[in-house]
Image (cartoon, rainbow, N blue to C red; front, side):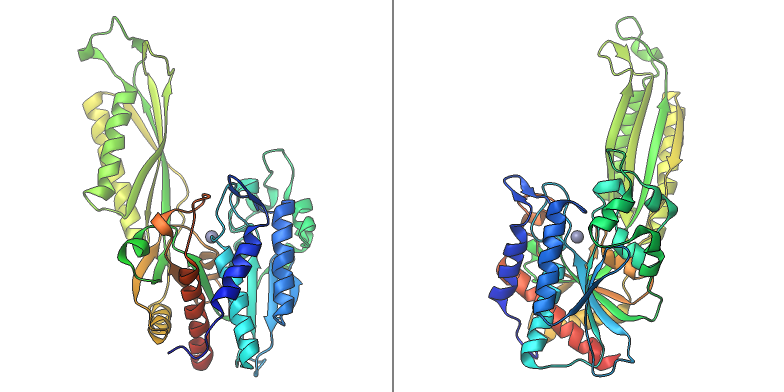
Length: 413
Ligand SMILES: [Zn+2]
């Protein structure tokens, strides 16, 4: 049995109220720094204050609500996620983690339970990175992972970040002050919808996240020979698009059949000159591999280089493999996973271990604190779309486990 019961109708009511801010017939639009995002943030601040949290906005624009512990010499335990959305996104991605954290605080207030550690609820700014095409801006600012490119980024209209940060109450010129040092937070816990199909398929209400996926992105340029599509015999062609097509199938098989890495995707393809009566002289494909194991990503790269070398020989084309930056996988420690599993069991809920295929604020915060993540089912595995849905029961289950996890961590650390 969990120690205290969260209020299922209250948490779902706040999710729906937040979900009306920026709602349109096509989905949620609370893109970071927009008026709708600011409305969502204002709503969040109001809820935090009603729950008795002392709120502040750091220089990066993160909203931080703090509750004193019985021993304020201890580092804080933080709970959080984000309230920005992608364009035409859903009501649950990010929102559940923030609204759920506030529900946890409300429950503790009602029960008169004072934790040993101070508690923080954090609403990280611009997780999605839609505007400025730089993501996890708030959590990376707090974790000391911000890069010069983040500060210099321009949006699609050529506007800079400074005024946007000011609009949400931050200050770009002081953004270094948002950095928290390792040891300042005892732990960070993030409740999130799975955004994949596994829990929905298995029927387990809780996912214990084992790690956040790493990602390796490549571009492959293929140089053949453009020529007349009517007069060039099939036997003498050097068709770059045909080589690219074989690579697309082989790259798909790397995950689907050979299981070298968890997922492999060719997401873009270009043919030049892209004319129906010309043999494509040039083609390029953009692809990515994802896995929580960086060795699997290295193995995938090795296999990619092997099949492209082979294709160059077989098809008499020149192939250049361009390696973009790798995003490192972030493992979640075994003791943190065990704590989430124990919390789920205390709540009488079945769980399964799951890797996160999407990125989350927790992966940045892992740079400064131990992190854990709880997943709840996404119906049909859909997210970043208007169809994104988790049932009221699923949402409440996740919040219940979040509360129990917090209490376990408070007892033991
Ligand atoms: Zn999210």
